[in-house]
Every structure is written in structure tokens, then in C-alpha cells.
Image (cartoon, rainbow, N blue to C red; front, side, top):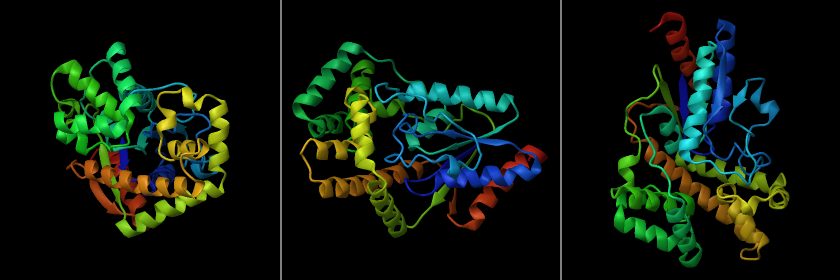
Amino acid sequence: MLAINGQTASGKTAMAVAVARLLEPDGIRAEIVNADSMLVYRGMDIGTAKPTLAERCGVPHHLVDIMEVTEGATVADFQALARATIAELRAAGVVPILAGGSALYVHAILDEIDFPGTDAALRARLEAELEEIGPAALHERLTALDPQAAAGILPGNARRTVRALEVIELTGGRYTSTLPGWNYALGDVLQFGLEVPRDLLDARIEARVRQMWADGFVEEVRELVDRGLREGRTAWRALGYRQVLAFLDGELTEAEALQATIAGTRRFSRKQMGWFRRDPRIVWLPVDDDAAATMASAVRGRVLLGS
């Protein structure tokens, strides 16, 4: 199988589609397995840059639009869904292409990692504290308990901060000890990464966010609120969505929400690259016309030549 890594707006999905189409003339079927936790939600289209049917170019995409915004899925849930999908594709002779998402989700799918369970009472207490003192204060607590884990979680990412604190209390150890190492749980994996210069990526992110607004992102969030967005545990916290909700609540102006989304996405992209760079198995390629051909050639070699 092929895993395509990279930061937000680096072009992972488009590259995955290009690779799949390049493999078609050789009789190699390839399908895309989504590794982005927010693409699973129906109706979260504009703010997640979900690929349209036209952009998918007939290449099947899995784990997209499978949940309502009121539902929630942990990394462990996503791991199970993705691995089951990958197993089904392989059994059918299809090459899975894993694309999208953060390094944590990608490695949870690919690598040997078991997630600690949850405790409803403990989680409820931490979420009550979150409401009372805010995500920044909880993140400071995490920094004191596990600096390495805190360094990999944005202070505004309340969901992951709460989860890290929950694991620390449940296990009595560090949250980082539960994170994936470099041991594949799945066989025959090829990993590539898309390398985009920072200034170009920053420009792409700003252009993407502004296009989201032009495409009706604010109206999308309004419609999702009517469908229970605020009641869900996960969906409303997505980048962009929580900023628009703050605008709708009168906490930010619309211009401030737009700028906060740009800034937050840029910070997230830098965190992503920090995690990806730790994985020595990823082969990094510049994003150009040769990248898809290079990946397709590597897959072709494994499938046709067994090399």
C-alpha cells in the first residue's frame, strides 16, 4: 500500500488521484483511503476542502461522508475503520492509497499502537474543567506533566489535550509513551511525503481559506448548527469551524474569524511537518509533475515485479 504524507494544502488528495490514474494502464487498481478525521462528516465539505466528485476523477474514496456531525470517533475508532477498509481492498487485489490527515492518524493506521481505553467519569470531569478554565490552562497542565506531548498539541486543540490528560491519569505514565513508534502493523508499505516551500504553502493556505469563505463556508456552518454541530464532541472543534462559530456567537468579527483560520491553519501545518519529519521511512519529494510518476513507479515495481 501507499501512504502519501504532507501538510495541509500540500496537495495530498490530488496527488493520490493522479497516482491511481497513472496505475490504471498497467491494470493496477488503486483506491483512496481517507485519513482525515473531519472528512468523515456529512455536510462538512467547504471547510475541510473535501474533494468533489469531479476532483476524485472516478477514483473511489473510502471513509468519506460516513458520520453525522453529532457523532464522534476517537483515533482508535478511526484506526479500526481504516485497517478494516485496507484489508478489504487488499483482499480484492486493490492497492490502498492512504492520503490526508495528521501524522497521528496516519501512523495510528500504519504502525503498531494500542490505545488506552477511556473512563467516562474522568473524561466528564476533564471536560467540565475545560469549560471552566479553558483549553490554555489545561494545556499548561499537560506541559507540566508531559512536555513532549504538549509540544505536539496546539494549545487550542482542546480535544487532544483532554485525551492526553485522560491517558496520563489512566495509565500513570506519559501520553507520549502511547504514541506510535516506527514499527509497521501492516505489511508492504510505501511512504512518500510532499515537500512544499514554506512561503508557497503559506500562500496556498491563505488562498484556500479565502476561497472557503467565497464558496459559502459561513452558510455551511449555519446549516450544520441546525443539524446539531454544537452537540457533537468532535466536529465543531475542526479548524475554521470553531472560528466561524465564534463569529456567529459574536465573539469575533467575520474578518477576525477568517484571519484566525488562516493563522491557525499555518500553525497546524508547521506542527504536522514536525511530526512527519520524525519518521525516517518517509521519502520526501518536491511537488511537481514528476512526483506522481515516481510514486506510481514504486507501486508498479512492488505489484508487477515484486521488488
